[in-house]
Length: 287
Length: 287
Image (cartoon, rainbow over the protein chains, first blue to last red):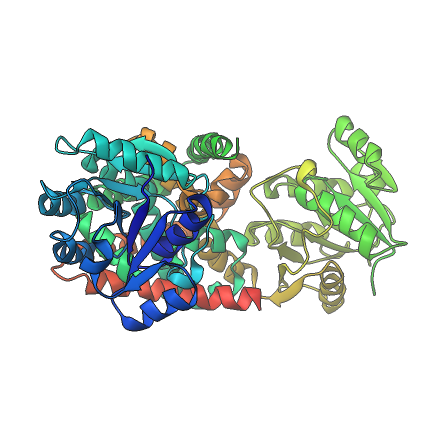
């Protein structure tokens, strides 16, 4: 059952795109948007993004059948505290944070017995940020990972999954911990690596940046993401990140040793193994 | 002065694209193509890529005003030996190798007093390879780095620069050594890093590959390049690569330490510095 009203808490890239997508794909659903600042509320109104917009979180959440937390993860608990007494017990609540253990722990505790919460992670970010970059098709074909726990009401899982499918997403389910460990490798490490690559050239030979080809721009695209948001994600996922960085350094060290071998066979095998794995996932993604 | 005939030695991605671009941008210029294997010669003929095609390198080079070495760098000296007695003393010769010190050293010696050689590096590769991926606009807007030495005739520099400009390239000049040191950082390290990223996920948590987003695909795109060709480049540029890998590991280690700090300010600064530098070069490339 799709919600007849949704409260989008914070209209950034994801929240704004959710509003646009819901307007298109769930006509008739009432869209309510909370923003922290008056000028953001004004922008939401002038864009015609919502049926109701306000800086009063409790007023926006009251009566909504679904609420979605779309602000940076570090701000979610505070806003949850503002709406917990306003939402009805059968409202479903989710968030779009890129990291799940700390968020799920906090929000689950706040909403326990007060509403039906489960964490989500729509993998539909971009190196862009903010309402200006929002678009109705951001979630089209994206993967959304749901992270139910022992405490999640089954009803919440079904309704939240239904909602994301309606937004155009594919769905996977895992635990918050398994999610964070996988993301350290497949998302957070690539981000940090892209930043480290740029920084390595900056430190060693800044003039070489003038000679970057498209390969360098692709390899470092994610490094253009918002630093404050990513710093928070990396620090929140600290333990898994440290393991991932360590493993990355081991692989680079191995490659460096292979370059000293008499034959090129070792490093060629290193590159071939990576190419094969990458081509496999690339094929899946375009099929 | 543009050449009235060019010999393209080996019709892969770059050689094939050169033939297509020359046909379009230098109408009237005779295009001669050498390929090592008969079946490649047949394909060149059936594609109508050349006025003359053959497996006889000397026959293709004889009388051509310009010859371009487009095979993997490790095979260039051998083919140079085959054509050196056939080319005229005022023919200009260049190559498209991604690494310049070993290539320039070898070819300069072979052609000294026999033809007018200078190294080139058109930064117009792709993760694709082979004649199938060739296209007439591959060089459009690309940067070509010329690497003259004390021994390069000035006339060769001018004529080769003229040719690349006609192909749509921007031109820079530097020494073979400065070229290789810059490429270690801006091209070869990103390639190795992309492979190491894929390999890290493969080793630590292969199932996480199923959850890759577009960020991961972008970050690792260059890892789909041909392993044998890249292994050769990395090994030939071994000393600069080892320094670059070491610097990359230092940056990753610094990031790992910053994650342990109480505040997120340190890692945020790390990310912000990279973003600022990347956005700067990105802007230049789209303006």
